[in-house]
Length: 483
Ligand code: F0G
Image (cartoon, rainbow, N blue to C red):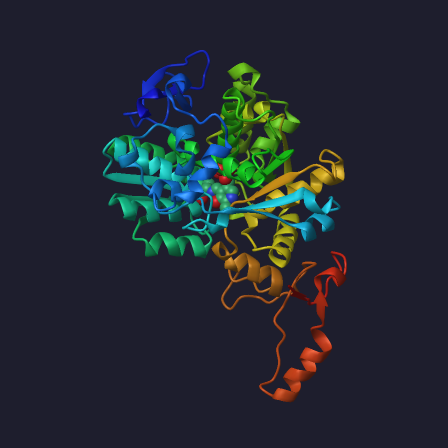
């Protein structure tokens, strides 16, 4: 019953409603954010979450094959025939005892949700499948987004499969090459403007209004509907039990906003008993949410957020000509568009916000790489944030935690190579070679083209250490793990 869905302004003083046949992205009356909402009495939601799990058995149905549309009654805004899918959401939640132990947790307490396993290599595909379905519904022919990289890769991929003309806006110099290469290869028109992501975000909104393009940033409420399913898959993997904590990096704050909405709806529908707590992790160099929520105490306050504090914060950034800066370029964002929705999610999930340094991000990224499938820097902010919250005693070692790893390791090879070798490809040509400083740095060993020399190096420098004999982090020498 897709007609049970509508759009509603999140500002309680406005609360204007619109049908889903419109592509408006912001409330035309007051300019605030919009939610997709449902008249749940008219949606045939299964009585138990486990009913969704049965769809694994009918995987010749393209909608059941999608890890997003498998949960379609919980995002029921679009008729089935207009739903777009390229097999997104086939991602896994994996228990990681090695990292749990390194962080001082009970071994079974930590799970990592690998969203890098999506078709374009990041969590964005969960949102794009939904937003492009809406774009099809409203007859869009041309679309655009601003991006720190992953959005552009995902938009370009889906635009191609839907036959939409696609333009992506990126800032100058900061985009990781794995992501840029995708947008170019998938045929997006790439506009690089002299500015950062926040500048791109401002421009793309103006361009979309001016030229009637369909906007695919997380301002788009239908994108966030798709991103709710990341949480459904986590609780599905835990036997339909919510963990105690969800930890997620915060950039433009679409994910965290979607997660809060997902849990509120599941609770209201009686499909879960309790809502997990949410930890949103900013990079220190892009910490608007941390500053406003933790330092200045800005709260949801039933939708009456203290706008003056937010405005003063941005006025201060302007006065100082401050630009967000972090090695985790995906979350290098000073003006997150979903700020209000994220603050609402923190209220729903009794959340906390933390900031972590670039150094911590890279150390924890290396740890995920060594003991997992790996991830890009922004994703590792979640594990670094978890570590901090464990040290603070906010998260107890026995509490169950799911960290969302938002993007694939191969998205930003330069950051990984710089960590392990000290060679910073971005600094100059030829790049300067510095001594790698990371605890887990794993530099290639230079050896002459000579069998004896190679064998000597192998015998003396690369001991094979079984997993249970591995020295405790951080004193890990070059190490090969036997599975
Ligand atoms: N992790 C990765 C890998 C990302 O690409 C992003 C956002 C985030 C985390 C933050 O998620 O915005 O929902 O808080 N990347 C966007 C982009 C901004 O343009 O690709 P968020």
